[in-house]
Picture (cartoon, rainbow, N blue to C red):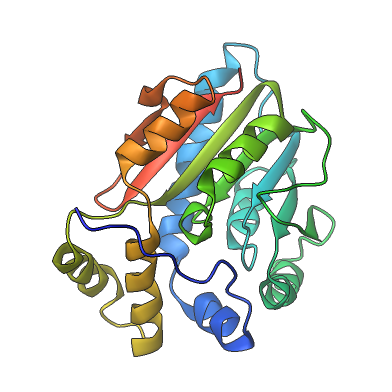
Length: 228
């Protein structure tokens, strides 16, 4: 297993934002939302009120996940947070194009130090934020803190492969038709990602069962938990 190599915490050049927005995230985003809805449905029997309540998306990027979620659930409202200004600028366009400005609110914020009070949200979601963070433990702690007791935490990201060669193979498998620039970003993301053991240790330290973290594809881990 090779060591984690940090990448830039913020993709906040205009070129980074544009290239990210042009990448084909559709299948990944659809699967994220489908799995989130399935987990929420599973938890409703335990008293969770469903995704019609307050949802916060951390590291929203250009807000593609909130747009996809709103397309599936008519009543959902999302606070979409990112710390990269250029990402949020493109998110405005995506939200306007989807006619969802009344249901998705954008805010700038650092996932390691959020301004919101404890237990502010019924559901906290995040897709592909953790590998950007130099301090993922703080991100997980903040997710736990802002989620209401009994609420949902649904977090997904890339897993760091066993070798750089495997990372290269995954880039070719899933981004073969992308630009060289996007392929480099994708490869850097694999190098910056956590292993599943590292994620399980972080949630264990927060008081969660490490088995709430699982591999959910050949390149993703998912943490799906009810806030304790």
